[in-house]
Amino acid sequence: MIRVLFFASLREALGTAEIAVPWQAGLELPAGLIAAIARQQGEAAAAILADEQVICAHNQRVCKHPTALNAGDEVAFYPPVTGG
Amino acid sequence: MISVAVQEADFDAGAELRALQADNPALGAVASFVGLMRDRNEGVAVTAMALEHYPGMTEASIRDIAEQACERWPLGGVRVVHRVGLIRPGEQIVLVAVSAAHRKEAFAGCEFIMDYLKTRAPFWKKETTAQGEERWVQARDTDQAAAARW
Image 1: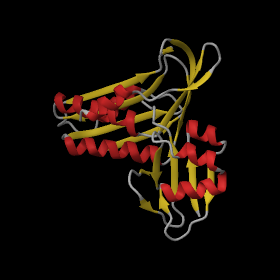
Image 2: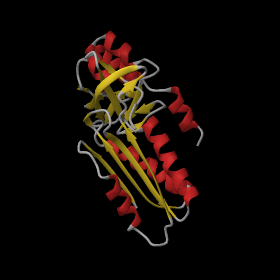
Image 3: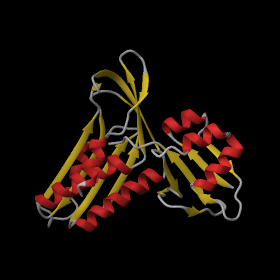
């Protein structure tokens, strides 16, 4: 499984903080995972995640390029950060 | 030496600075920044703010930023404290403190860490207006521009 986390306004828009997505060979971040989330959570959820403002982290590091996922990985989607 | 703390509790900025000063007598400068919550944002009175973060990644990303600062300047120590949870106007939100042999590196390292933290560390602010409305604080282009200078 892939553990997928949502934060802040994305968590509210999706109505959940965390989902589990089944891993399969060749699953890639971001497009492949977003397509898997679309099948599981619906197209509206996937459209929220595909917004160009959304930041994606893979195993707690920001991920800007297509990346192969391994079973047990942690992925997070979140809006632009506003700390400090 | 890098110290990173993410906590709900308020912090004692003086104690943090003393901890840096006690580190090494060869260090001649400590520069620090404390961010406070304002009672207005974008022209609207605000009464409270809830700070959310990504436990684990938050601490790792701040440590990574501090390590980058230590690669760019000869710093003695770095201490970062960032609060999460409920914060009220006038309260402290964040402290960045840096020691170095001389002031130039200390000022630069402190400003670099703060600029990078604001645009990279996974924190999100949701404020409550005086009218009782809750709204997510929007990221600012000026913060992106500040971080891009380095």
